[in-house]
Amino acid sequence: MDKIWLIIQREYWVRVRKKSFIIMTLLTPILFAALMVIPAIIAATSVFSEEKTILVADKNHIFENKIQEKHKVKFQYISLDSSEALKKFKSKKEYYALLIVPQINISENQSLKLIAKKNISIEIEGHIEGELERIVAEERMKNLGINAKDVEKTKAKIDLLTENEEGKENNSFVIYIVSFLGAILIYMSVLLYGVQVMRSVIEEKTNRIVEVMISSVKPIQLMLGKIIGVAAVGFTQFLLWIVLSFSISAGVSAVIGTEKLASVQQTQTMQQQDVKKVLKKPSSKLANATETLSNLNIPLILGAFLFYFVGGYLLYSAMFAAVGSAGDSETDAQQFTLPISLPLIIGFVIAQSVINDPNSPLAFWASLIPFTSPIVMMVRVVAGVPTWELLLSMFLLVAGFLVITWLAARIYRVGILMFGKKVNFKEIAKWMLKG
Figure 1 (cartoon, rainbow, N blue to C red):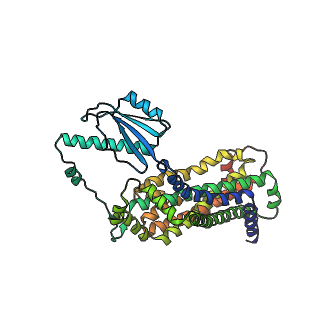
Figure 2 (cartoon, helix red, strand yellow; figure 1 turned 135 degrees about the vertical axis):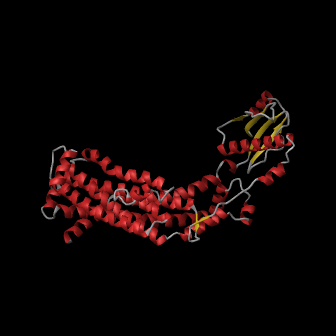
Figure 3 (cartoon, rainbow, N blue to C red; figure 1 turned 90 degrees about the vertical axis):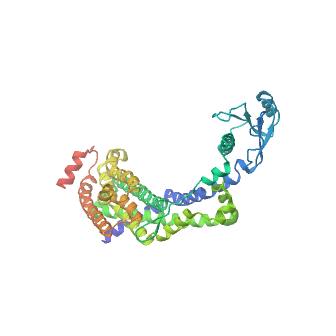
């Protein structure tokens, strides 16, 4: 055990002292903070930040003074034909775009031309299109003798609030987000740190360092020490990412101003809503989402995430270490990487359908198979899973790790000392079976 501990320490300190580790640890939280702050800054300096005038050539007065202005987008109406309107539009710089309205039949669908001096904003284009459709619809109802206010009264808004058999609020969207987040974190982390183990094995084999180390420790001790050491590096990096992300976000909010940042983000997400109405009548969906979050078994979800993250990492890292020992370079090991990664990829694909139906037969079996359970069971835990299924899945994952590690060790102890030979699947199978 002492020798394994020394290997763990070596693997840990060699990696955390690398410039690449330091750069990625510092850069990633900055990128996360930028993802939160930059959209708000962009919204504050968007196309609506300065006043824009759109010229409407409406000779027949079909839309005159009916298009609602939005933010700093104004509309100026002129009774000119298209050629004269185009001359006026080109002659003055203050016009942002020109909307040409020909003689149209309200009862038929039309195509109107919007000319801009530069590329027009998709928000402005969408707003104008929506307003024109609204005005035409109102005119059609008027021609048919339909009262627009009566039609408005017939519109219904129903919020479907779901709950489980225990009477607790349930929001499928919240469950989907939490499930998907847990699945993708495990998927990316297992691949990322598993490949690091493989590269570490290849590096030491290429540099012939392993020949010296094997004289002092057993191959199984070297492999386990390497796997656990890289895992410790991963946990350290995750912890630093969380701490630095919160610190940077708090610092940016303090510099920009929390109230200003919040108001900009609110404007961005509520562009076509009446804020006063929303405040007077809060969304039941939002309240339901908050209730669902409070009803989630957070300790169980975090505990399951930690277990399946560690279990999945150990299982796949043992296989990555084995194939790393079989090649003299990363290029040689690439041929074995896809077959190892494929079950994990399949698990992630299955998880996306399991999110929609967490109790299906596919979900049940995929959450028990050790190669797919780290991702699939993580998805099911959020939605709720019987205790016996969770315990059985955990037991099978531990058992699967022990079996895979034993087989990987048989490959590792032969491959780690083999140089200058191209290894294939048949050769690896022979090492694994005969040891």
